[in-house]
Image (cartoon, rainbow, N blue to C red):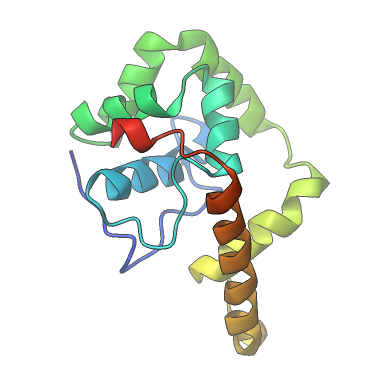
Length: 152
């Protein structure tokens, strides 16, 4: 299994795709970091975005975490998902092919900004946006059971 340290760098962008599935590289990065104890301030097991993709795939955090743990690379994760959840992978590809619903755009903008994928003239407001995102993440940690905890 490849390791990643999310205390040093962000996960891949939410819009990055693996095998035609948006968000999959990001959740793989977060799973690897969580397994290595290097998740930093990111959510794994409590993230609504991650949970949505896992629901579409037809799996759950413990199963996905074990797949990532036993896979040497991204291609092996994708192959395992295709073998175990072919209908879910097809659903996830259809989901990816659709435009992002407008209600999610502010969240994805905040993710991009917090992760440093958006900068330019907005750089001076990064600290308040990061603080807001930290409050949202802290609230999610407080109110949502960590569905991945048992698998880590």
